[in-house]
Amino acid sequence: MLGWLDPRRKPRDFTVVVCTFQRPDHLRRCLLSLALQQNLTESFEVVVTDDGSRDQTEQVVADFARTVDFPVAWTTRDHDGYQASRTRNDGVRLARGSYLLLLDGDCIVPHDHLAQHLAFRRPGRVASGDCARLDEAQSQQVTDAVVASGEYQQWTSAAERKRLWKRHRRVWFYNAIRHPRKPSLIGNDVGIWHADYARVNGYDENYRSWGCEDTDFGQRLRWAGLHLSSILRRTWAYHLWHPTDPTAPVRWRDGANVTYFLSRPHVGRCENGLRTGMSTRAA
Image 1: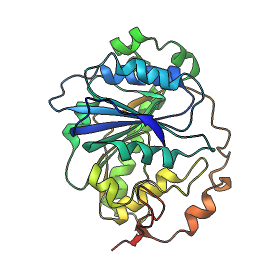
Image 2: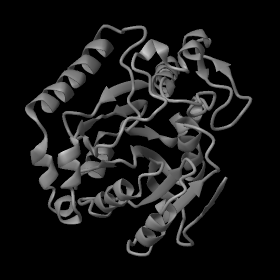
Image 3: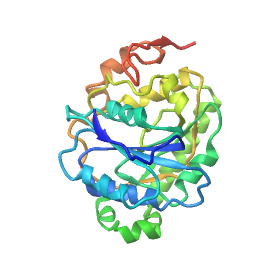
């Protein structure tokens, strides 16, 4: 694992872990939206964790670090296929905050997004979020000025708002009936206590292609006794358009990770995760 740390780093109240690969323009706008956060009463840091980009990504992070008054860290590895699980764990390994916000680097967030997540924190709760999807034309119009003004929030279609509301309702319903496998987790906007992330040994790094790693992580959190609760009535992220990853299957069941996902035992901690060799069955 390669990277660098900000010399100003010290334990913080929370850490924003931004996961990225080969989208420096999207990442720059994501980081700008974090720099514009308001109404924060607690200290935070940003850790950008990269899946081995071979472009201007590191320079984007370095330029950002020089312009903000909070610490920024950067980590990367040699690229070896799509490894979102490993990349997220790399970022959390550097995190100094007691609370984590896991965010994708192709998302921008409203000015009160971090404050809303912090207000939503409760012991034993995982904040399950999602993102409104901006289309290609809208995404091309997201300039620095648009991020600063928050104008992009007005571009969410009625269909997208309805989809997010339905997702919020489904999370509530599945929790109410104590569904054995749901609600599922979408990893692009998740608030979680650092200790709870470590409790399940983070993401399972045996997932080495697109798909299933978020669902697996969410299931293990629930098996460990944690409550996945929707934050979508308070806030959501906004996803900037990009082409679909080439490893993403047309049908979920055809994905490269599905066989492993369906065959793994019901464990609260994965073996190959934040720390290796720590598999423990859920109570």
